[in-house]
Structure formats: C-alpha cells, structure tokens
Image: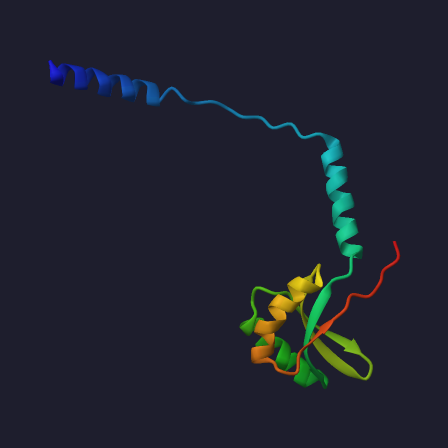
Length: 123
C-alpha cells in the first residue's frame, strides 16, 4: 500500500511539474523612458567629490593613472590637464562622507592624495 501511494505521488508530481509553461509580456509606459533620460541628464550635470592621488608631467600622470587602475579597479579614474600639470583623480562620491571613507584606504597607498570638493554647476 505504501509503494502504491508513493508511486501515485511521484506520477502526480511529475505530471504537474511540467504544467508550468507560459509566456510573459512586459509593456512599459513611454513616460518611464522619459524619466530615465531626465535622470541620466541630471546625473551628468551633477558634481561629485573626487580624490586626487597625484600630479605631475604627462608621462608621470599616465604611469600613476595605470597604477591606480590596478590598485583601485572598483573606482573610475581619469587624468586631467589643469595648467600647468596633469592630475590623476579617482572616484565619484555624492557626499563628503563617502569620499572620506574611501580616502582613508587610498591614503595608505598614496599619502599625497587629497579630497577635492565638487565644483558648483548651473542647471
């Protein structure tokens, strides 16, 4: 009796486990796309705190930039020309607190690094 019950349960389970097939269609409102575009535009105009890890000649900045990409691969880095030197900056932090948290870690590897305030933007 036990084997008959287990056999019926297994047949029923196998039968109903294959019955879950379907097709899902997602319809997105056009205003969502417009909102995403507004969000992207506002973020591109926003200023962020950054950490400057060093500066110098073009070759020195490029070399430092490559090393920073290896050491802090999780942060975006860039080399900027600010007359008369090239500066290596990493990160985009919305708040000073976020920048300071990462700054502690960066400063261990690059003791001459500094936190730069975001420049005010006009929208």
